[in-house]
Image 1: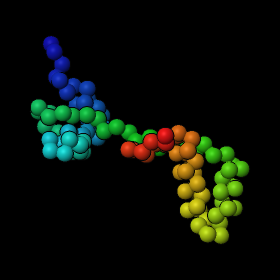
Image 2 (image 1 turned 180 degrees about the vertical axis):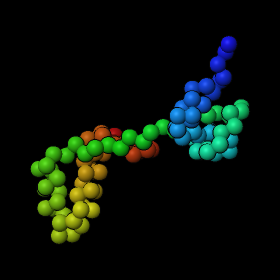
Image 3 (image 1 turned 120 degrees about the vertical axis):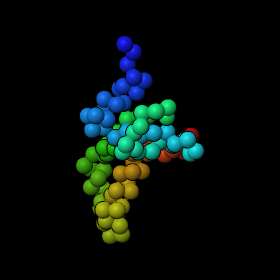
Length: 98
């Protein structure tokens, strides 16, 4: 017997995964709470993986000391984001570092 064409996604949905359908107009993926398992394109919603800073404690301390009188923790967060982009850990969609 041939498995249903959406069998893997149906099994993931039964196990609690969020299912998405491809929107016919925008071409983007949207969550669906009640998939119909018809002729649409279905997928398990990809897990978002957030980067962890690669800054060491000295770099974080320096960023804090350099910005504590102006932006405080916002300055540290911005420095961590800049560091991640500059070191190729994070990419901004549509922007290259060339």
